[in-house]
Length: 388
Image (cartoon, rainbow, N blue to C red):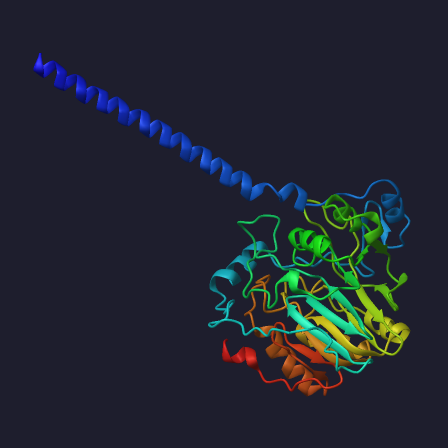
């Protein structure tokens, strides 16, 4: 009798342990499923939407639209001339330093447009990558804002920031207009748009078709302004003109269903050019003749490669574009924040600085968050070389 009771106790304990394991395994499975659901919940929304109705009709009427997609002025069919194997080899064995050895130095820009600033002062605050605040004639224009940790539809995969934003998005001053150059994830970000929708009242100025993404994300129609190349709109005492670029678009499996472009901001006395993403092309000289000269140009200098020479400028070409545009001060953008190519993280400004000196071009290379007064730019001090 005693032996039987002991065996029965051991059997009950074994069954209990098995039940506990099953329950724990089920709980872990549910937790994993919940985590996966959280990780992918925004992906369908982040992909955006395709233009329909009147928006689609306007796309089809654009001179830039041919067949079922937008096109560049010049052919870019050779933009992926290198094979994927060669690019992978560069990533693995190219010896490029793709991250800084120390933290990227950040600057708190403080209050935008100090009260003591002259009325005609033109200020630029670069927040990293292509995100810029332009303070022009008492107005504030935010360009390609990207505050999320990854430029990706996923929270778990995709290029991750090399440095945090120098200022929280909620602490930006009141904005008068938000410019978007195209719909790639490092320029048009769901989380950032949602925050700006909540915290700001400024309209979004976008190339044709990009408004469909914003509409899906809850941006009301009255806050969306879509323009084709050469079209302009007057807002907040400024004129905004959508101008050409040589690039492409797409957030999922199809390309070029929305337009890409550069932007010109014109005040009563000051002019600013922003390149967006682009390869070098003859259109810069035309923009310079028609809409220049410019007090400052904000030009993409990073994420270049021999594999795509036609859709991202090399740093030396950025200097040529600046001269074509009849620019005054050149401030580089699209570098130091995300690894989007195989070159070293600081290579863009090393090359740009050499070329600017060789061609006597005025250059400013601010730290993320640093405010540059265009008429009194700080000397280039090579700050990135100290952490390279």
